[in-house]
Image 1: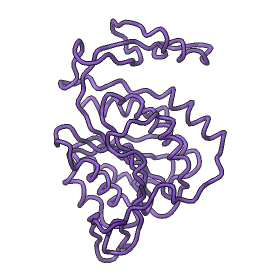
Image 2: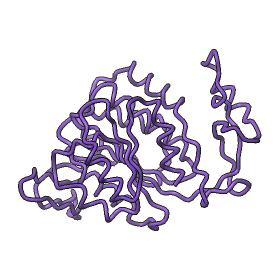
Image 3: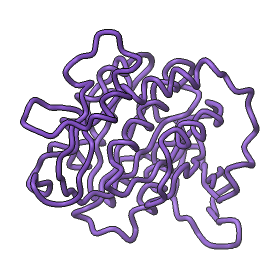
Image 4: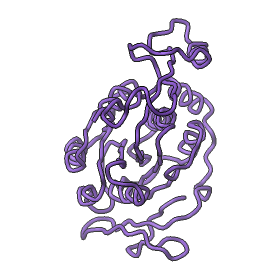
Length: 283
């Protein structure tokens, strides 16, 4: 579904409300839901799609090993080897190293029992300030995160001046499907971070606060809608992956993370993402 700027009433198609307030002197962007396939089709960039899929396979997040995630209980999960003792997942390892002439330690996949209760909304910036390589890398990050959180509940929201719910909370999607949905949305418009965070909050409305969190991937160059700082207190937790490869707002990114009781990590290349995610989910 897509949440589209349509005046102050913020009415959903069908009449239900999607409340997002605006402040005087700003754009007054708001939202209503329409079908995702109502977006303009774009000519598929096969090279970008293939590269994004390749990066997604390389980017892997080790499931959080905090007090809520314990070895020895729960379902078996295939994860990249982290240096401890574990049972190798031979089939997954063969697939992982098939296209890698010189495999590294973390190319080996092992099986571990892990239990982690998390409901995560990934909010990704597709605005006009995120173009070309940046959006392909961001889309690949979505795929990697979706893959590694397969035992948890994940939602994905893409945004610009409006927002699209790419994957509703709890919908089980192959990471490549999530990637392809992201890639068919053209980078466009202004950057309405506040509206995107409201969309994320709605995805968490039935989730206990101790289990929910929002992860924002953006340059935080907010230039539409109300001040997103006013939305953050309603979220259970907000972490920020701040893309600093071009124009960015470091102050806003850090403010959002502080208000959201989370972390802000800067990203200069997709290779920074695994370490940033490990830091975020270690807390």
